[in-house]
Image (cartoon, rainbow, N blue to C red; front, side, top):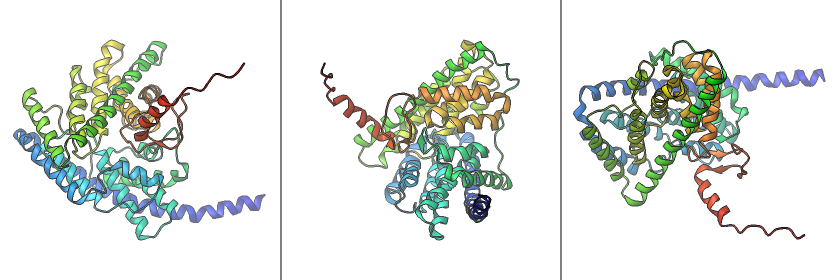
Length: 438
């Protein structure tokens, strides 16, 4: 027995050495790419704010992004969904051109005022570069799958400065109700190293102050449950509207570059009509405001509408930072109704809407602790889990699988979220079973 245990530990050493090296290589690439991306994003955001009239060129920028993907990126246009599919069912190496395409497309989108995020870009770059390492080293199917997951974790971690949440995100996002623990060491190593690489390059992440967290009590927990329900429904609304608009635009506008051209025109016109650029770009200043002062109820709706139009029409970037904005401003607006401090509810909305929309309650809870401190943990965990449950079996990533249904309703395992409506339609059409004979 002792010899068996000793043999197992000895065998573990080369395994750990292998994944420490591979995960570190992927993390250095992902962290460096994210640092370059964040520096570029900062520069173009400063330029856009100083030149508000540039938003009128957003339709042309949309056409340029759409044309680039139409000519060069049809096989990588699925973005994060392509990566999730490759992890579940590896078929071919993710094309290297995914990284520069999504980087350029996102920077252009932000320069001219589309309402998009940054997580999608970082995750796609991290996964693509990790897969290139796997290809160069001729790793087998299982090792390649694990290294791509580590690349996803590295990209997420480095762009938000949340290494533990980044690691959990790479493990949790693939399937609802199921995690891949065989990749836990590479994902943790990659996320930690990528975050440090970004800091080494000089990246500065936004800090949010939430003040004192109130003592846990029955009234406070009940209020957080109510807020969690609202956050989950907001996440479900965002994911559903984005997918429905995207599908409708693809059906009605056959020429792909024309889709973001039209979306850009709608966004530019809306900016002109409202007289504000409050809902374009990342929206970090408004997120910071939601922790400092009471805001209006319209802010989360405005950001939701602008982001749905931008992403649904084909602009590139990501969903997560807009979800942070939507959640923080929704939480801020709910604070007077729920009798909780608005910085606390802004922080809970920040992570919980993301938890519901992306089906990642654990990663979101850890992110709350990393961003806002350990005192928020009980509230964040409750809000994120309730949001996750009430968002239903929807999500921003249509390639996500159903590992285990969220509640008692039975669903087939490994069903893609994109396949769920057709499955439900078949179930409704199936004749009811005859009653048993007496």
